[in-house]
Length: 133
Image 1 (cartoon, rainbow, N blue to C red):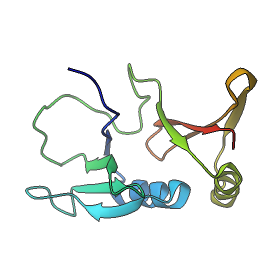
Image 2: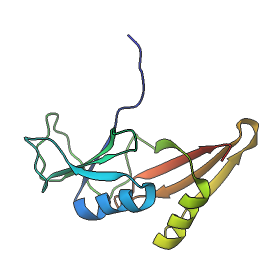
Image 3: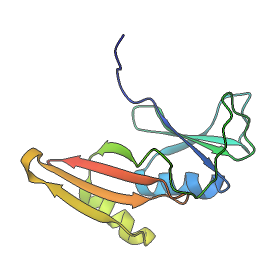
């Protein structure tokens, strides 16, 4: 057994449309309806350029196979952040400016990494990583 890659991140929200719009505007992800039995009103999946649904956005009312208490907008509990490897640092910074988002940047010169930290409408901390970009 081995782990091949991160499959997706699931966000439970009381702001389904706002959250989907955020991931489209900031990261250029494509919004699509989740497959049945989920409905467009309770679940949207955000796809990357490779056709992978890397962010699943579910409404508070969305049925879940594994139920546990979730409070939308609260800090992300034991998960500190979600990290995504990206390209197009200058374009991202323009989007952050256009959207009026707060962000923090960090440079790790030893590995040629620029990190950009920002939060989504649900207070999920994103670490957007740019290697040599």
